[in-house]
Length: 167
Image (cartoon, rainbow, N blue to C red; front, top):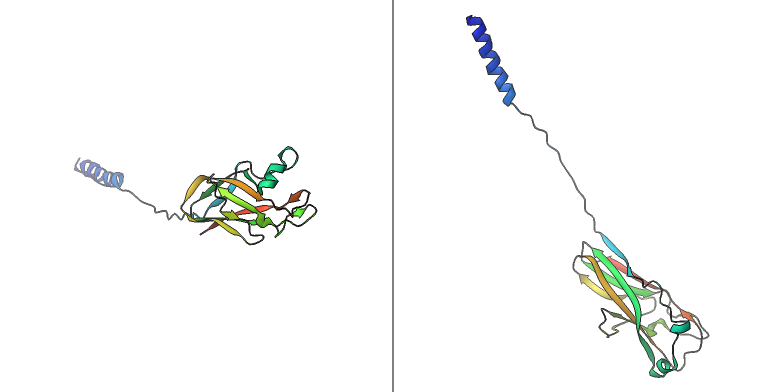
């Protein structure tokens, strides 16, 4: 009987030790979050059409400009400080019957009516610099085109490229 009690005691002792024993396993986790920058059209601005019913009027030509031209809104997201710039595809508009410089085009942001950003041909123009992190930030754009007595009739075109970059 003593052997049975000793056996039961041994099972209880070793069994309970193994019941409370634990093992662990470590996991090393690496997560890379790169600089994330996204730029897109929030409200259509990818086409600005000043032809047909929207063409330049005699009053605008005499005033020397057409302004408040809706340019749409850009959607900006970045997890890093960012810059926004714009550049024309050439120093001059294409088409038309004469030469019209793209520097006759000015940009206004956030409806400030300042038109503080003249296009400088193929040289990028900084619109925003060193801006803080943003998610779904909206940049409203309007354009103003300067009209000169030397401007000749025709349909003039250019492509503006907006670039979002890390500061």
